[in-house]
Length: 76
Figure (tube, rainbow, N blue to C red):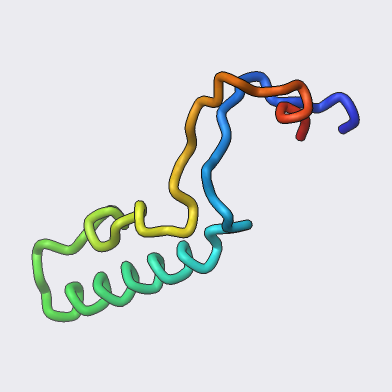
């Protein structure tokens, strides 16, 4: 991948390497709540994980367009 580079200068603002631990925590919470609600025969079981957790609470904050980039910044 010596010639691999980004096409657009969009970078994440974070110090975290991965969101793996956050995703595991969110999925465990989602499965636990879904199990409890199905056992109690509650009709309002959550369908999406966003109904149970806030995905913006993770270690990574998001992405932003960076206008003043250098060629070095676009390398992968």
